[in-house]
Structure formats: structure tokens, C-alpha cells
Length: 191
Image (cartoon, rainbow, N blue to C red; front, side, top):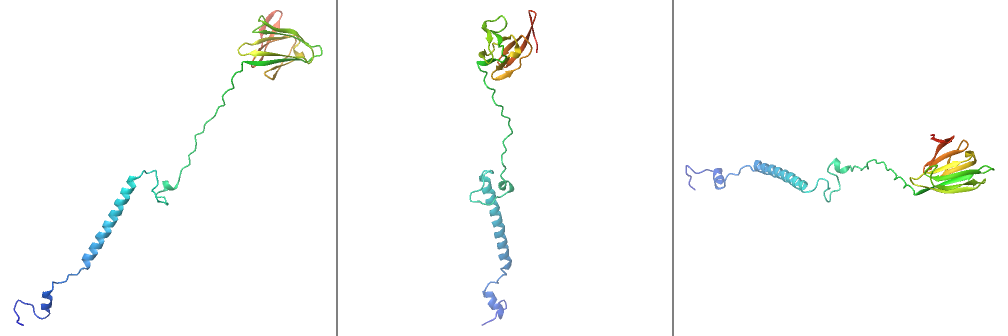
């Protein structure tokens, strides 16, 4: 074996035949770092892409755990407070007027339509315990004269009406009696 001045000697010959081996450790660490960074970027991109495709109000399918506090708490809906007003009952076409004689002497009554000079409906004397019934039309009052008011029990639509005084006159509507006093041939209305 001849030695040339430019040729390697001894152990150097072995190394010349093979290229020098560099330390691969820094290269391996940088590859791992890039793989980790790429994986994180990929996961973030996947979360953003998957989260953007669904409606925010609907939970992800297959997910059993909530992703935020708004998913965990479902607000209960409270209906607004409303006041229900019952419809007023229809006004009947007629309401009953009932007159009962309560005195042993009986009671003289006169019933007319609309007023004291209206059409006569009934005139007569009721014996004690006798009852007369009349229909009060809607919007058309009756006029009632009692010869002695304390001798009669009067009911309008089943409700007892107060009668006081002596010989008295009343305007009878579907809502009750309105006292009309007769004084020496003139009529005045009292409350």
C-alpha cells in the first residue's frame, strides 16, 4: 500500500471511504416539534370547521357532555301573566218579575208597559200567598203600582227587591226596581 501525501493515513482511510456521520439528534427533535405543531394546527382547524357547520343551538351528535354552560342549563319558559276576563253573559230577552201578596188583606197591584199611561198588563188584587209572574222585556221597563207596598214581596230575576212606604209606584227593569213616588197627582222620581 502506497501512501500518497494527499491520502489519509491510518484511521483516516476508514473514514474517507464512508461519508462522515452527522449527529441526527437535532434533526430528529425538529421533526418531532414540527409534527406536534402540525397536529395542533390540524386539531384546531378541525374544531373550527366542525363547529362552524352546525347550528349553535343544536348539540353535536354523539356528544353527551355539554361544551359550554349554555348547553348545560336549559332555561324554563315562563308564560306571560295574563288576566282572563270571563265574557259577560248575554242579556236575556226577558227577565221574570214575581209579585207575592204577604198581607192577610191581600194587595192591589197594577202593571203597565213603559209607564203609568202605558198599555195595561194586569190590574187586580192578590190574596195572601198568591203569586203573579210577568216578563220584563229587554229595554222595555214595566210600571208597577202597589196599593200598600209592605203587603207585597217583589222579586226581579229571582232577587228580592225592597218595597217600603204606602201606595207606591216603581219602574221595573231587568236589573231591579226604581222607586217612583206619587204625590197628589204628580209623579216624581226618587233614588
